[in-house]
Image (cartoon, rainbow, N blue to C red; front, top):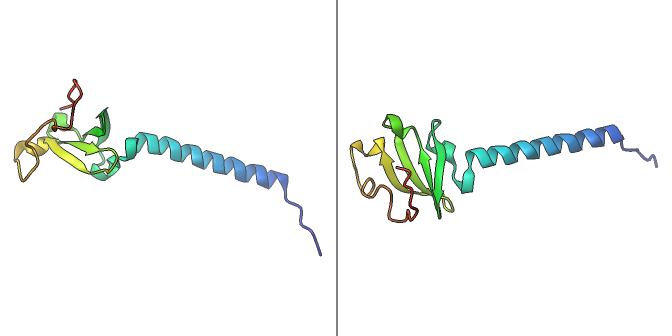
Length: 109
């Protein structure tokens, strides 16, 4: 039986690639998905702005009439729509900006 020796350079390279990939995933997750909220799913111009308890305020350029979302960071569900989205209120949203669940002093919107 022929025994193959593992090439130490290949092992080091594989570990290095794995560590780089893990680092990139951690950085991207913390930047784009703070607290389980998939900010990119709300729009390309969106960013998590502020948190309060279980809510994350997600600004999608509300300063230029874009929407502002309050999202439950545990479930990813939108709790309230605010900002430019509410120029034409519809349905159950745009009634409480910020939402009742927002208990922090500083309001994002």
